[in-house]
Image 1: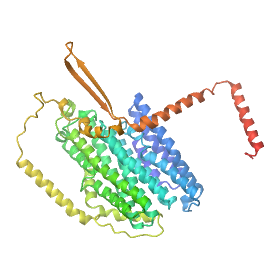
Image 2: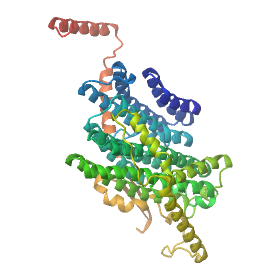
Image 3: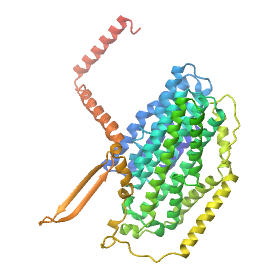
Image 4: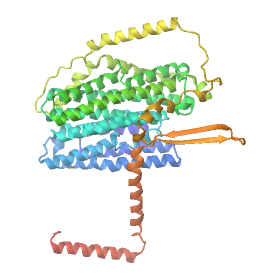
Amino acid sequence: MTGAFCLSLVGLVMARDVTTFLGFWELMTLLPAALILIGRHDEPARRDVFAYLAITHLGGVGVWVSMLVLADHGALAGVPLHGDGLRGLVAIAAIIGFCTKAGAVPLHSWLPRAHPLAPAQISGLMSGVMIKVALYGLIRVLFEWDGPTPLWVGLTLLGLGVLSALGGVLYALFQNELKRLLAFSSIENVGIILLGLGASLVFAAIGRPQWSAIAFAAALLHVLNHAIFKALLFLGAGSFAAQVGGLGLDGLGGLLRRMPWTGAAFMVGAAAIAGVPPLNGFISEWMILQSLLHLSLFGRFGVSLVAAASAAALGATAALAVFCFVKVIGLVLLGPPRTTRADAAREAGVGMRWPLVLLASLCLLLGIIPGVLVPTLERLHHHTGLLSVHAGVDLPGTGGLPALPLALALTLLTVTLWRSSRNGRAEPTPAWTCGQATVPALAWTSAGFTKPLRILLENVLRPTRDLTIVHSESGVIQELRYEADVPHLFDSLIYEPVTTAALRMAGRIRRLQSGSLRTYLVYLLGLLMVLLALVQLGVLT
């Protein structure tokens, strides 16, 4: 089944006609659901899989509409579309359809539901490849078949990118389960990619082809980078789960000492996704930020305002991503183990280690020599047909040579500090816990890391709290139980009301299914009378 899923992904990219494309598109959606249901049979899993299928299929209507309209007008064969209304329809349908499958906010609700349920290798494929295939379809439509697009299309992608980047990283911060956290992080990175694609479309619309190519290359580079370090993180999470039996952040700890190879590779992936130089995540995010800053300086007032807000949002996203993965590293890899199973964890076998080491090496390699790929990615921008002329682009600071001395200097500094800390290491002493014995229950928790931010954003996130106080017979407090949660507002404010209204309407419509043949004949007679009336009025011919 996993092989079939991989074939569906490859088949979609290789499709050369609309029928094949849409067939593999549907197969790519259904196979992960089947893989999840093979391993999980409980009611919550079935409910979340149903939500995944419902959201992706409803959003997928936009894919069908855009592709069928393009095929009907010959745009897939190179015939340009005529008419702003038709091109606008294709652009809107494509954004809705492909961004739903890519997990962009506010069409993302399926992604944090499906990822924690799937096996680690399937989660890696879904996050690292499947949502990128959706972005591939969006790029083909907007940059090639429906291009050149008007200015509002690029601004729309910038808006979706801001919502996805900030929303994804904020909700990732407050997750207590590792795979669900990584799922929200994928939403964040989809937002970063959309920022690059939106900037490229806006640059093209305002007549700046060189920077349009740079933003396009940066977005594609981040597509590749995210595929690498997100696959690394999901596979690492799978190795941890196999040893510990769960991925609750408050039940892990100390895994770097017990699983050194897996832990070190996971730490590299966490640093890469947080945008720490000289790893690959930093390079692509830096290029996208430079594109947005240039757009804010040289665009028209309205465009400059949107670009400046997008650049500020990307900067805030990068800072919050560092905060998020400092929490992950601290709770998962460092400190003492919080459970007996975490204490008994052992390094995975060679077959599970070498893919992690390979992916971690790629994170470092692409961060040091991105210039190997960036010129090729820039040339792809010319082949999309978005611009009528090719613009050779000089990308200062992204080649291999300027980045290599910086990487070597940082590596030398890190090794020097590490050796000096080992030579002068102090003797370990017990932690002071107000006179109590040091137990795992008193260690830092996921909620403890994010408490200040949760208080700061209380009016936006609307966290819930539940405090239970247990008294003795004499009235002395014996126990305190505190539970806090940050609800997913998109579910509670958008999807749940819509689902409730749809089920209520379906219940009313169901009354029409009486099972009586006479009633159905009355329905047919009524329909016939309506059609005859429309013909008489000239509405139908």
